[in-house]
Amino acid sequence: MRTAAVHAAAGSLLLTTLAAAPAGGTAHASSAARAAAEVRGATVAAARAADRGIDFGECPETQQLPGTVQCGTVRVPLDYAHPDGRQIELTVSRARATGKDPANSKRKVPRQGALVHNPGGPGVGGMYFPMTGVLPEWKRIAAAYDLVGYAPRGVGRSAPLSCTDPATFAEGPTQAPARPSAAYKRERVEQARAYARGCAERAGDALRHFTSLNNARDLDVLRAALGENRLTFLGASYGTYLGALYATMFPSHVRRMVFDSAVNPAPERVWYRNNLDQSAAFEDRWADFRAWAARHDDVYGLGGTAREVQVGYDRASARLAREPAGGKVGPGELQAAFLRAAYYDDHWPHRAHALSAYLQGDPGPLVEQAQTYPEAAAEAENTRAVHLAVECNDAPWPTDWAVWDRDNTRLARRAPFETWAHVWTNLPCAFWRAPRQRPLDVRAGQGELPPTLILAAERDAVTPYDGALELHRRLAGSALVTERDAGSHGIAGGPNACVNGHLEAYLLTGRVPGRRAACAPHPEPRPRATARPAERARPAV
Image (cartoon, rainbow, N blue to C red; front, side):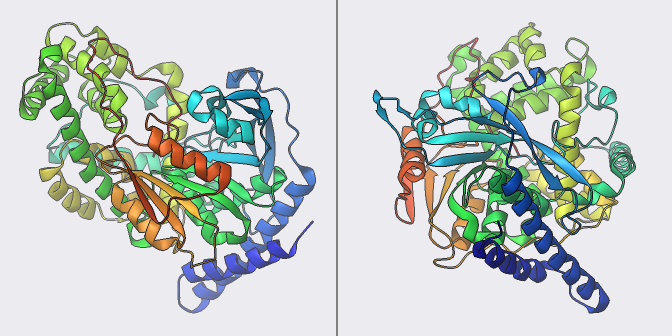
């Protein structure tokens, strides 16, 4: 049924959407009319989903989920301005609340509803989230909540998006010049043009509907389909931007909301400037890894200073350019493998061992960690296609290659590790063939939202800490918990007991620790020559 709260939220959404519409004459009138239609469409879709619900059952074998997890689908309009038009199905997974206190199996825990998770991206699915309930860090939360994951539009089996043949997408080896030549740049520009053209040709008119605003509307339809009057949500990385949009668009539908590793939501930084900030921050995080490896020179033999570790890395990259390891691992694959180490410090021992072994004549560990696998190519291409579709559609991007070249040439002088790789990933947005939106001005005044919780690591490179400060400033009543002197990305349910204590207190009781709180860093990884990274649920951006 359509409640008064739904109509109130629709009015609020109309106002915020109109604020984001371009000004001027007929274009403004057309944008205003479309915004009003999207408000009505979102309300209609949510009401229909509430009536229909989700028919949960066994998960398809291809999902490789245990029997404790159920799967279903929820229908959403491709275009919210036309809710009776083409529908797409989003896949959803759920593990029921256990109702058992993990510290006392005889004590029953009251169910608090569904906790919906988005792991980031855009382009990453969250179907595996319900499995986290078996981990010690999540058991108290899993006792009170149904853990719900889903694949956003375009991802996995949810109306999958593709821009090129996956068979050719992840072919190695590839190069990664820190100072690319003019000829190399021209080659990459043409590749970006071709990729953007492929997205337009393969998706057709549907391409324009893969946006963060539609992802937020989909999230409200999912809320309604789950039978929840208000949403309890945990968003990580890009999921924090999605959550911030949701809180701005549907404030009366928010129950509790956790923003884990926050994207900077300032409209002028979405997305081109955020990507520049990210490249700069990766340089600092790469320095953290090199300093750690140098402190453990007795284990890895990579040198006693960060500079010596860099020399060894550069030597490996140059050697791989001449002769790829295993015929598949070149400088590009090496850089991608060590980029993942910048995300999560539990990768550090594994990566340091691989680099050390390679420099001593054993390429095996490096090939194992860095090579691309044909069986994963389709998923990787799908992830990139959705990532680009959402980010390119969300906001204006420079359309002149000279702007990208100027900005990133300057940045690469002080941040060479990730800058150019980041450019090649996002450059199709310069040649995008779908309309660009203006980002919504995320904010909530005092009393407009229940208290919300922001978690951030001070040296996170994927979502630099300034983003958490900006989101905290924009959401009145939010609380910010900072893990000091740490840089792993996505800290909810991780190795820091202090952070997890704040997470549990908020989700289980609604309590936040005042405006700000700080946690000491989790311990650095111990050096082990053959260590493998611990497995846990992780976001991506």
